Image (cartoon, rainbow, N blue to C red; front, side):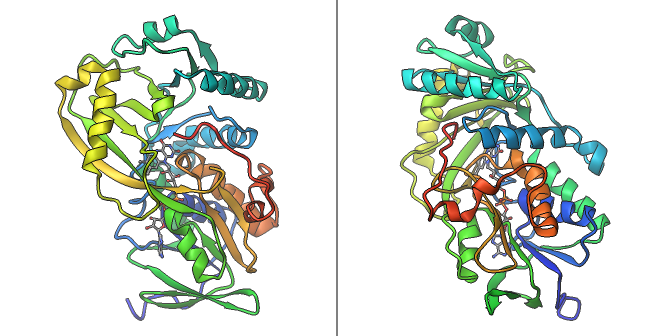
Length: 386
Ligand SMILES: Cc1cc2nc3c(=O)[nH]c(=O)nc-3n(C[C@H](O)[C@H](O)[C@H](O)COP(=O)(O)OP(=O)(O)OC[C@H]3O[C@@H](n4cnc5c(N)ncnc54)[C@H](O)[C@@H]3O)c2cc1C
């Protein structure tokens, strides 16, 4: 490894999750040479991306997030055509069930925003929710927001599809390489230090997901991204759950359900979770999730737990990602997707490519999502965070 380990690169991408993989592929597609993607783990896509629920949706409350979905989801639809990799896109729809009057009001605004941008989200009455979800108990439902184009995609396939396609275009993608430091000289990137040695480079892309803040510190750049544990469990088969069961969200409880294999996947966000890198399952909170899930979906009592895991959200103060160049020349950031970034991976890699090669975002103007917005008080809040 010592002799083979690259000493220089034109672009070093830190992180082999969906953001790093998509950026590597899109950069190489545009003809960028000498790209190096570094992943600290033994395999690509094992952190936030590999632990995510795989949901993809158009239903957001801010225009920029809806527009990101309008660009990104069609890229997932064309993914196999483009990369040769099957990603199992299931258009099961997302059904947000609303039980609080203030949520109804906000979702009505979001519905108008989405429909104005051409997204075909539908408004459901309580009766319609009961009709569509006969296995669930939602007596307190006030309304629902449903989009049949939302759905599920296999995260690992997306990462491996991009990594494979990037490698075929000449990108060197290395695992077991941990970035330990970043050298800055005269205000610009000079080198990246790793557990395998130093790599001279003038351009670094920080695609380190929940670790993006630590990578920022290495370059002397404060990036307000905190890791927050979230967990999921799946059940053994439940034959009564229909094939077309939607991705159901009990929005007020941050509790969700979707079909996974022959059973159900459920997750719930712990509002008391403290920032940190712990990825062990919190058994006490798992019981809270399970009880809330059974209260909504009593047939879960008949199933056993098949698997469970925890992962990290990469959370910014306004629940929107950070795109673009940092105060250090040659240091780029694509991170901080706050729990809904998997679905925006495809367009994000393309946008970062435009930022690096063209000096501006061409596919969609995401300049409002720059790092400076936090110090300049330009945050925009996303309401549909699960
Ligand atoms: C439980 C859970 C459910 C979720 N559900 C959804 C969902 O349904 N839909 C959706 O769109 N999003 C969802 N998300 C969010 C989504 O997973 C993330 O927004 C997205 O995967 C972020 O991708 P990333 O590439 O930025 O991060 P990651 O996938 O974490 O990739 C970053 C990579 O950088 C590597 N790295 C870090 N530090 C270093 C270093 N020093 N040197 C080398 N490599 C390093 C890490 O090992 C990691 O592989 C969920 C997340 C979780 C945790």
